[in-house]
Length: 253
View 1: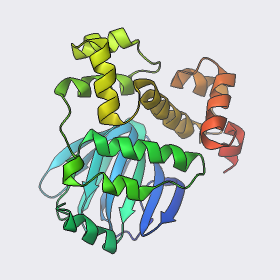
View 2: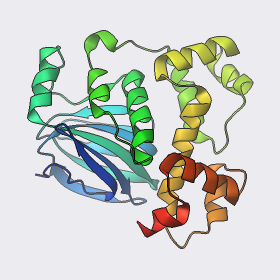
View 3: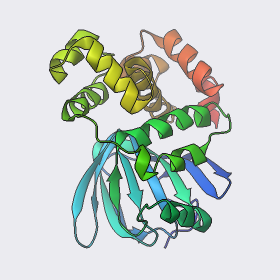
View 4: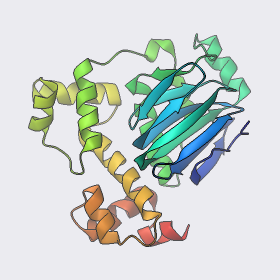
């Protein structure tokens, strides 16, 4: 059973806050994890890649952009795709589980959560990468049943298109994918994800870049091209603006 702060991936960064443990983990391409469990319940937010998770009774594919709740003591096996994955997790201490139960959240079952929860986590992840103090409590608050609403099915097609693209698709292209007007798309996306389409895409692109930068042998120009930046300078500016560190400094860490 893994204790608080322990995962089977490679930790990129970790921080404890008010009974919550926030960690960014990277998982290697095509790796398989043995059967294991976690002492604490936790929220899991895949940022890049995908993986299959098997429990004693089910198997599910977990893809980037999802929000998942895992109960304390749950055991599972994970198999990652050829792209590997980067996952942001928030482990939840006992007192927080009690508060979640008080507002009607069932903490004994694994479940997928609505996009609104991922939207809160995406914002706090940005603070986390910039070495600011993230507000994990804000993410927990988003679990309140009154804050949860189901988005229209076409919005998932748009979200998936953003994760599958190396450059930000034109709004008109995304609107055709959704089958709705551009203005309606932009408004609905912002209402559900709490950010613009461009902001969402830039966060995912940055997460991809941070993951690739961990390979010191990979040229910066190659990372820039793979992640959809216009050139190496653009990559360096955006990484510096978001994290407060240059790519070289991130690699030294």
